[in-house]
Length: 79
Image (cartoon, rainbow, N blue to C red):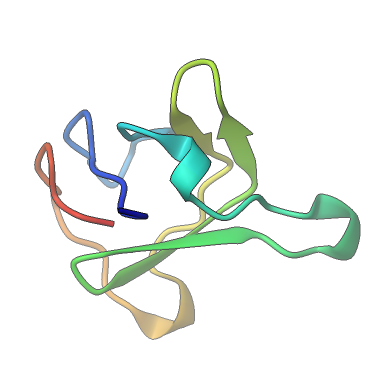
């Protein structure tokens, strides 16, 4: 399966999204100004950093393309 899942609750103020496996997710291309993107329960989140050691995404831009930001996403919600 090419799905990844949250490994920690995600709050609006978090700097990192922790997932079970970042290798399933898009790799950002900073040189061409292309961020990676995940969708969690309808919220579009762009990220600029993939940490393969800690399975986390960073340099987040939440609620992109007019999507809302939830108060919390709970552990194991699909991306």
